[in-house]
Length: 234
Image 1 (cartoon, rainbow, N blue to C red):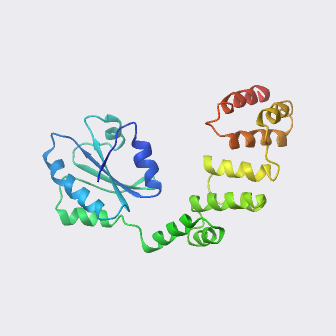
Image 2: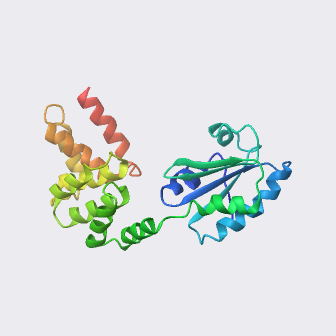
Image 3: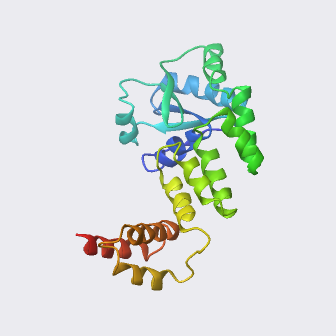
């Protein structure tokens, strides 16, 4: 079954989802005859993967932002994404067997399936085994790092996180690792106290930032505290 995607939902439904599952993007329009021909073929081929390849559809007339992002000049245009990147594509109508081969080539390998299973298991042994297969796998690194923090092994967690580029997820786990076994129960009181120290104390400044990471961007206090930190520093 295909999922209709818009300019507003593209990031979540295509880019973000492709981090875990191959996503096929079918760019079409109601007036396009060949689009109506390959649409059902794409849906049949992706349905046959049992969710291992996901089909999304974009009406180019209604979603110019996506069309521009793909530099679409003619339709049907079909793109396959993994990990946020285009890995294959074709333009025009093709026979069913060619489209089936296109979709089948996106299926995860046996190793990829095994890796996904280890990460899904989520226990320490499974996650360490996953990292033996893919040492830079962000999902495995973050999950194992979080377990190490819970076990009071902050230094090991930080060393593990250093393997991969910094992201919002890694920053949060690293913050927990640095704050160690003394979590802050009263964020407001601690942050207020730290504000008087952040200007000339690197450790106080790092602790302040780490607490904000644990609070997260959804906490309504985070943004005001960040502004206060900026004022104190500059």
